[in-house]
Image (cartoon, rainbow, N blue to C red; front, top):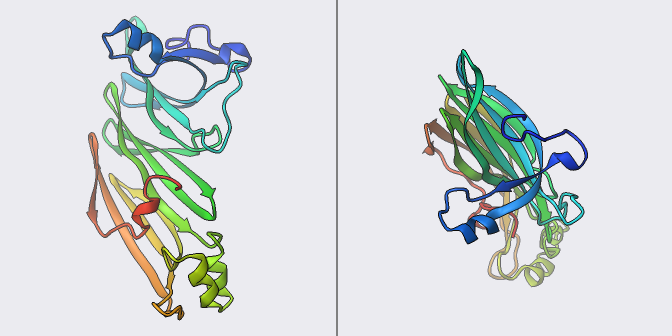
Length: 258
């Protein structure tokens, strides 16, 4: 932490640092507006190869009292810093104070590091949230290679459960489709889809299982449809591409809670 933040400390006021979220601007007024105060914490040090390393950080915006915002709508940020070793020691070669947002409630989520190939790594952050009866989980994927962190995916939808949304799903479970029809006239469906994911080399495998229940036009309960699918993504430098299968989580849940 000493190279990117010389006066940083793991606790107290020195943990709060001034960073620029958009350091490439050439307009002084825009650059000044982009400087914010944040609480910075190291998450991982990744040895990319014999002479290169990366530091991954959790970055949390703070209020006027230097306390991180921890409300439901407040996500954290992921930062990355790159270093090169020579006979003179380590030097910082690049910095990205802001790579992407992740998480909720002042936390970026549960993180991990996976080696995708020679000198190529993935930082993952899994997080979940509920809003007005809709619950979901998402996976943020950031690639590390050379002197750059690249956002590979801002949030792969991992799960959805709308059992608490407007009482419709509870009505379906209780066998009263008329109540469900009145409560959920727009969607007429109840979803419970969960998943497990893992990396195999440079491929990300996400296996989904769940059920979908719908109402007919007259409010009758239609047969429950089982869901069992697998989506396979391939990670290459700068890209994460879906190469097989599909993600069965509906589009309205693909980028975070409604």
